[in-house]
Amino acid sequence: MSGALAGLLADALRTLRHKVESVDGEALGAAAIASSAEAVAQALSAAGVRANEPVLVRIGNRPADLGTLLGIWHAGAVAGPVHVTAAPTTPTALLKSTGARFVADGERLESCGDAPPLERPLLHGAALIIFTSGSTGQPKGAVLGHDRFSGKLAVLDRLLKLRADDVVLLPLQLTFSFGMWVALLALRSGARLILVPRFSTAAIARGLQAGATVLAGVPSMYRTLLADPAFAMPGLRLLMTGGEVLGKPLALALRRAAPNAALYDLFGLTETGTCDFVVAPADQPAGFGTIGVPTERVEYRIEAGELQIRTPFGMLGYLDNPELTAASFQDGYFGTGDLAQLNSNGRVELIGRSKDIISRGGNKIAPLEIDNLLCEHPNVAAALCAGVPDERLGETIHAVVVARDGASVTSEQLRDWLLGRTERYKVPDRFHISDALPVGSTGKADRRAVAALAQRAKPLVP
Image 1 (cartoon, rainbow, N blue to C red):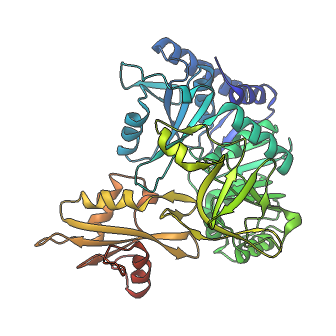
Image 2: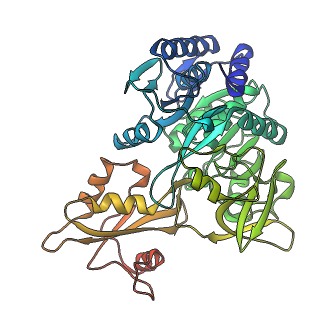
Image 3: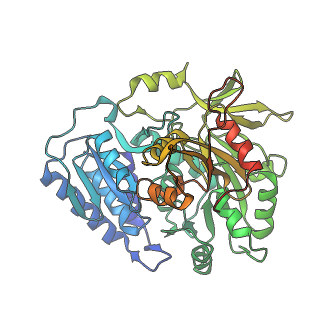
């Protein structure tokens, strides 16, 4: 058993003329990736993997990761990506959430249990389980189907028109739907793919020197690159951005730094299949500052101020959470949690979020998750996190922390505590040690007041 994405990737490898590379120097030819995929599929079959069974896969933006994904799909299983640098608690939580018995890392297969998970009809035809932050603090597993994801790739192919002579530079992690579709689209188009395991200005510079013609990133990455006024990308013909609103000043700066590149500003959610809206070159600069217009076969409406999206390319549902799945849709429209309005030219503008999710550098973080982790510290009585606007990252995470009576705590201690328990990007950028949590007019702890406090108070540690 296989699926549409497996067929797409296998077909791409059969005709691919290039090696898949890393800016760190690693490279694998198409035959080697296909051979690795076969080894992974055989190992899973020999271990007794069942059809539609979830398998966690460690991802590090390595060329070998593509073979691992293909092998999981060839075995008829569903891939649950987790980053190789994730804190140990993350794969542990995902193993529990998915019931996965196997973790794949390259061709190495680790067995984590004997009993197969219960049959889940939702996973029939599924390719990926992408975990996103939820407002409750618990990760939500968005189940993406082979056919729907492949359908979206066809739409993006028509929109972006990648070419076989392109060199696609990808610093976006394959653990995220944005990174995943860019990699698959590049291979589908026959382009040369250069993966960036860890984003830095130096890594991007190496990729550009290698002849990159296409670059995909989130706005925080571009802000970092353009912090150097001399940074230029004249060899690019195509720039893609998404994950957060680009904004007109950054968009104009990008066009100056990459004068020969067509800029596509894309907006979408994992749950809706990504790239639901676009500000295309023909809609610039007027469209800058908006999310533009819907992409092919996407419908939307604004109900009670909330942007809602209907698409044939969206998720199959949330793993093991039919109640949340049902509550997320109304008449087939998915509630994004984003507050929106139409401007005078018919483009959609985002004006805020109805949920507490923090968007830091394109990563979505549930503040309650960080609150709960901080409160597990033996010297912490209470904690409250919120996003604060930031020019480079979009938002930074600020945490107000109250120590237990008779105890003390420092920013360094809290940072070290979290680094052993969650991903680095979820660790607050600033800690404010306080006698009490900020409250609103009702006397309840108020996340919005955290931002106000952050703007008034000098953080203890940058």
